[in-house]
Image (cartoon, rainbow, N blue to C red):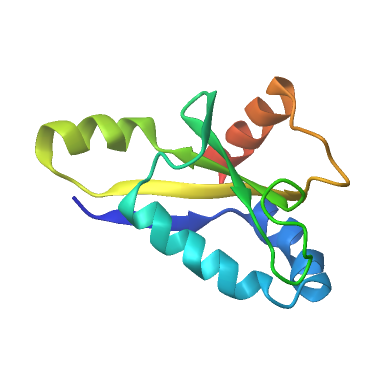
Length: 120
């Protein structure tokens, strides 16, 4: 089974100012991609085949608890096919935010992000 990690348009838009603010973030996102390739269900399940991943940022100096949050989504149709046919599994990064600015993501916001993702 091969895991493919994709990035949504909203993730790119949200990540741009964070990449400028935290120089080490680029490397941490690369490490996250490698971890997702090993474990596509990384993080805490939010339902709707989505997961919240705690990401520590060295240049922020707060560790995972005060770091960033990344929301990932597994393509459910592909997941079922992987189990049956051995196809590729697709993980899409749909949101990234600073925990100090946004406490959490609501279920409504999550469903909206997934809907936008399916339209891309």
